Image (tube, rainbow, N blue to C red; front, side, top):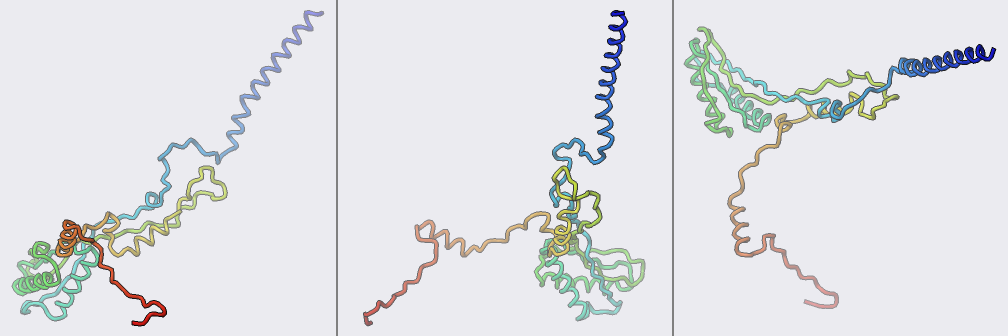
Length: 246
């Protein structure tokens, strides 16, 4: 009788231990299956938190073109066309600080070829008068298939493409575990900057320095070598003291 009791008690302990082991194994699996929003492992650098990187402004070069219709019997440019050329030159400087090369394309093989070449030379002279150097202006011909074709002035201008905002609302801002900015954070500022920037080339890097004032710099250097003060001379003023007459 004691032997049977011991055997039953041993079997009961084994079943109890197996049950505890099974429960301890299944509970984490069940709990993990219920948590759908738990963040996974993160590695530094996988997520972009800087708005300039999340919502970049794309700067590219696109052609800006001015077409001028020149009649076959025209004697150069008309007053209206000359005004358009000067306006085009001013806009090219404002849009790209005047760094782009101006290309004047005249039609070849067309009925107005001779008149267009004369107009192209006049347009070139107007560009030089507006401040462009001769090396920054190129005159070339293009095939026009025997028909009247326009005289073309063109240059490559920088264009800023703004990012699209307000599309990604995938993250629940009430339950964030990573403490990172939401997807649309900073996009509106990037878009406004791309729309308002006067010269998109400034987004690529700083502009080059202009030439120095040689006369002023030489004068200051002469003072420095001779040991004279570099600042402006202070004006001496007299203050009348009370009770004293001049």
